[in-house]
Image 1: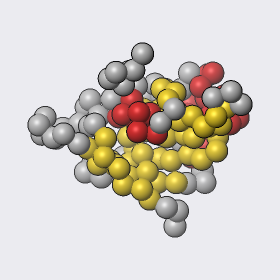
Image 2: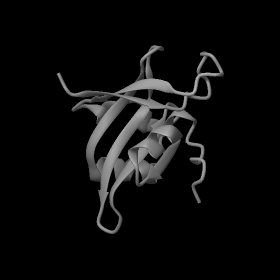
Image 3: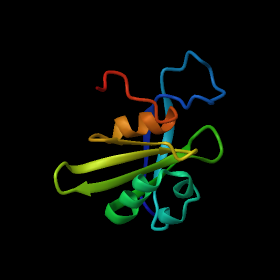
Length: 118
């Protein structure tokens, strides 16, 4: 069994839980076959190419209190920027961030920009 890491992030936009909940728990499940996820087919071509070319590790992001994948977290290594993280939501919208928690926030929230970014 691969490592599972439980994290807390903002809830997805379509989450049916209590709006007052400040955090949403999901599990990062490291799997060897993350490249087979149908979410990759929904990603923009350039982001998909980067993920497949430079993927260091990929995690399926699964909701703890809901069924199914929330998205993907893909670690990529860039010669200029070093380690970067692609947060990909269910619809293939992608965010590229220097920190995993920011990429996960974007993935859970439809790849909206992280508050305070830019």
